[in-house]
Image (cartoon, rainbow, N blue to C red; front, top):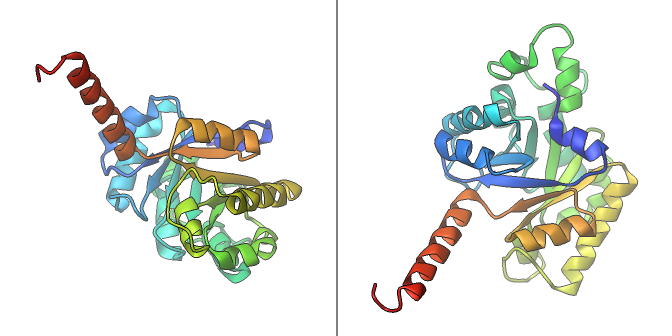
Length: 259
């Protein structure tokens, strides 16, 4: 199964990514019909485990969005399992050095490019795991380490020079904490915006791509205009709460004090 997100990037287009914190196939099915280019199941900070990842993938399968996972850590066991489940991209938190980036890529790739063990229990059903499958998987799977610490910024060039790194993903909250700033998305500090530009330019020179987590559609559009090629808007639980609060506030306001 071709990676539609990679195809989109190759065509010079950005992508809008959704984020799944809710551990339910039905909510993933609903989100998959909203118009996202990709959906990422969040195992790090979302309320997700391996079985809920699988259910989310099943919910989004009929709707053509690219399935991805943010794994909880740079650990080859869980990376291999989410790939076997059908993830077409893996976002890995707290990659702070070339060695950690190499370990991450190795966990995502079959030999001779890595150490991924063969057993694509679900991915094989859709990727036709016969001759050539390992080469296709090695070419199609997106490896996206997160850049979210001062140390990662210090080692940025070394991380990006690791063969097999397709893109990087910025976590604005942890990046802010590492720089002595409050944790938040949609940042406006000039020093942080300069870091964003540095990452966009560094990835662009290497034919790689940069992604970022945003708290609003407006900031996601701004990020794409800046040069990011993947912009995530909030997460499913946050969007649900925001929409519910807005609808309730409208109802109370327009009911003129009768509720």
